Image (cartoon, rainbow, N blue to C red; front, top):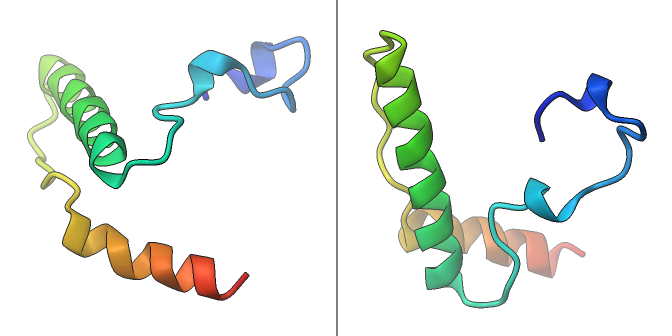
Length: 71
């Protein structure tokens, strides 16, 4: 979310606040990596030189399983 303090209701989530909504892990990874790539492009445009590795299923699966089973 961007500029929460400027929103009429900062607690209300809007449709464009989501990077991804769905069920398939690969679709979620594709959306997350596209957002990461876009953020890195903007960062480079303003002089930032750090990089980030794309998200992977191997990184995500254990966290999702832990979250799912601990509910």
